[in-house]
Length: 112
Length: 114
Image 1 (cartoon, rainbow over the protein chains, first blue to last red):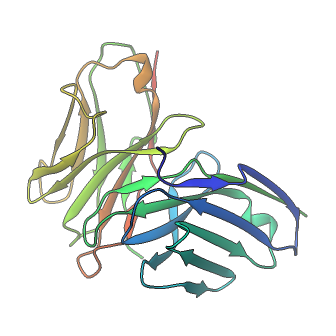
Image 2: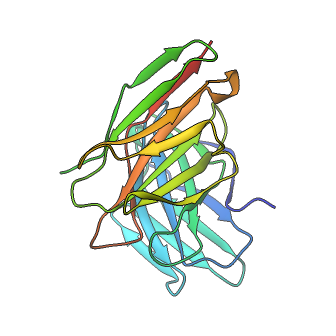
């Protein structure tokens, strides 16, 4: 089974619109993290939400976590062309120095 | 702001050759990781390293791979005899001592095996 599966695989929107990406996972987790990757570049950590949290905000980002459904969503409000990137969710099974299991990612294209 | 650095940014090698990928984790970080991402696929965990020894490794990390912390700053991944399927982006990551959850990733090394 796959841990961390995002949908949609690709999302195309206009600047100013909101973008929502979803992530589902299979096993119980300690926390879930979202990363951004610009084409061919490194992974930039966006936000971390712990299993005892339901919602978290950071600037234009809003993350929710539903442990009963084993799913998370990332909302980017008022998107900009610079938000064009791939977005990955990654789950950590344990507290502390747990390895991360990544999903396949959602490719977001924001057109001016 | 401190960041993880990796060198080289791109390495091209012939099949069967040895390569060493280098990483400088954020200073005072204690836990280090290597991940790889084959083009178009998900990021996969290879190995974690703590207190000068491997803490955990995936099934991908076979005898062809090794890691080392040769000095107080560098963290290396060696592939002894590269295969075509080793072509990927390799990411180093480290964890800040004050928080054991957020992994900070380097920019990656793109390895191309011909």
